[in-house]
Amino acid sequence: MFLNAVITRIDEMRNLDMTALRAFVTVADAGGVTKASGLLNLTQSAVSMQLKRLEESVGVSLLDRSARKMALTNSGEQMLSYARRMLALNDEVLARLTSRDYEGELFLGVPHDIVYPAIPQVLHRFNAAFPRMKVQLVSSYTSRLRRMLERGEVHLALTTESSLDSGGETLQERPLVWVGAIKGNEWRQRPLRLAFEQLCIFRKPVQEALDNAGISWEMAVESDNSRTVEASISADLAVHACVEGAEPPYVERIHHHGALPDLPSIKINMYGAELAKEEPVQALAEMVRQAYRAM
Image (cartoon, helix red, strand yellow):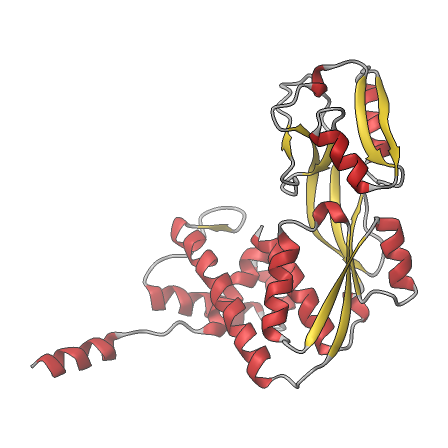
């Protein structure tokens, strides 16, 4: 009797279709079936069929089809979170067990102010998938990383820019936010003291925003050493700006309630993936994309 009950329960267990899950995630990321079909190299009807199959397998609606634009239901939002993790693990297992035994080094260029929180996750996943490959993280300014990519000194480069050049892809677009010392008050002072490296791409738009708002400012730091800038900010001697969501641990976001001007948005771009032919480079690029989608 007990054995029959166990067998019945096993028979009733259902398995999710990984192909359908991938179609669902792609539709959610692309914002609709039309664009997703191109990314998946399938017809729109085939993608729609995959979505229907997934919904039937779980017994709930994942997409709100009454809305003018594609929207996820509450169940769809929950499914999307699970689906991303399942696909990531699926891809990691396949890469680990079926890929050729690659050896060597890859060089990934990332501006120091967007290393966190995405890049450590990427490095961890890549190491699991390609244990005999070593990723060297090169942290520098956007302009220098672009030059290094042109010279072949890095395989992939992430940048923070106001626009996107040919050959690149935008991973995210986020506003700059004001940051200062934890529980600091320097942001209330006038002239406002700023701490930026001389080559920092955020320096000019911050100065322009203050000029347009009629707020006087002065540079508290004239250095290309990021440690000097960090020390000045954390000591509450100056304020800074960084990409929203990438605030380093030694600062906090300034809640100025309109006392400081809003800052422009910055694109986080990736270059090099379009020309990459080696499987490890392509895998690294996809892991970077997934990390930013998850954010």
